[in-house]
Length: 373
Image 1 (spheres, rainbow, N blue to C red):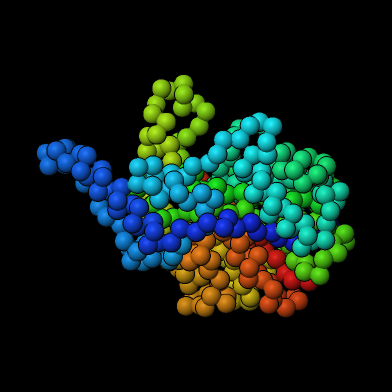
Image 2 (cartoon, rainbow, N blue to C red):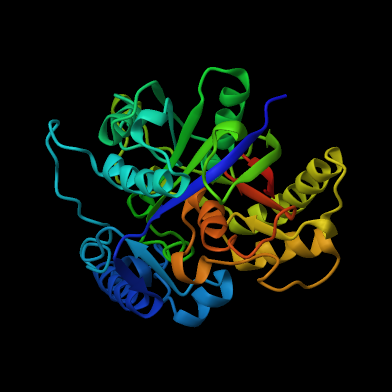
């Protein structure tokens, strides 16, 4: 079977940052406004008052200390509580394609590839800016690549699922070099007015170049030893926004039209699934979890990642084994494990093995086992 490698990754980080202190100040101002507006209903027991948030609550619950966003002003406005993006005409590059193309060019430079080398573009992300034309095709045009492009969405596992599709395309001969792009504008689907989740997400874009090993020229190459995917239906993470909403005559601003989750249930159910998935995948390749040099896990919650690693390795481990980027980037949906890999792989030695793993809504879990060449 043809050997396939990851030969480059790219990262676009929006320059604007929202600290936990800023976020708490805006949320608590919003809560005060809403509680005053509905004081009579709250006093009558017809409505619950909105509880205040705090920096301590956020950091204890998630390990997040800040997040990068494309536009912070609207999020921090207690009268708006969502980003504001300047509308763009159909003749302009869309926002998602813009940040995706920036990460893509970064990955291509790392891999030593030009646009002429790319013959497949996958846009794999938790949310798409529109239904069609495909975001991947717009990104393909923006970077000047040929071949084909298509979109795919498996929520927070989109990147790893996309990498498997790219690996299969190269092995199967339908493409020679595939770019997997993950533009995650999560600030647009987060409910910033909900205390239980208002701190979770941040914006970012990542990209990964996947190609045949015999065409790779970059010094930094990672042979893909195996990929494995699994899904199991669950409603515990859900977003009901879609094109059918207008036909249902439902409120476009209703709570279910943005990110919702049953956090405790997700934690309890996903952690053992993810640990078992990784262990089984490694076993199929003749590898023990303790022999893996580094785990680049999905970056949703610090406690979740720590428990997955404890289940795999039987004890506490340092960030050297399982690096965390949550404190700076927050949850970036499918891009999280790719950010961790992008920022924390240079010190591994030839022959050492690592695991890129995502887990998210669906439930969906994807793992990619790689070895440094």
